Amino acid sequence: MTWNPHRTVVSTTLVAVLAAISLAACDPKPKTSETTAGQQVDSAIAKVEQKAAEVKADAKEATAAMRAQTSEGTKTATGVFSDAAITTAVNAKLAADSGLSALRINVDTVGGRVALSGDAPDAAARDRATALVRSVDGVTNVDNRLTLQKKG
Image (tube, rainbow, N blue to C red; front, side, top):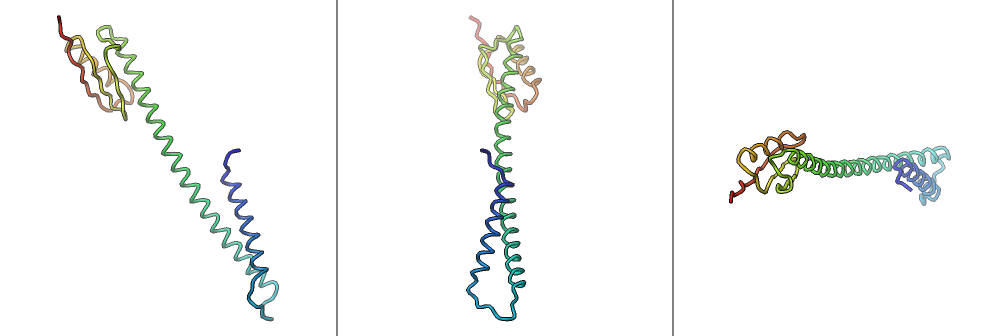
């Protein structure tokens, strides 16, 4: 069963109403002849309405806090997904380039920042790798740490 904030508010309000009516009926103060039954009922209703307003405010606050937590969790999950998607797209572009080997280039993405490490066959390929990474959506920065392969 899932949590329903509306059902919780209604249930809590009902409990508060019943408690207020019970408390009003058990009021230990002596009743003066000037207080009528209608006034006592009005007083009990006012207390119930006040409690209901307090419960409603508390429920709104709790709901807002939960929404904020859910929103933050979604942002974090989306960020991780975006980084994974960026890494996948970068690897695909590197693999499609005949001068670069995706197997020899390590791609790490954090917060849209891509770090490349490994070997490039020459300076032109190294520069091409940077250009390819920059062309991927979501990339905010490229740290190209590729080293040139030693001929030998």
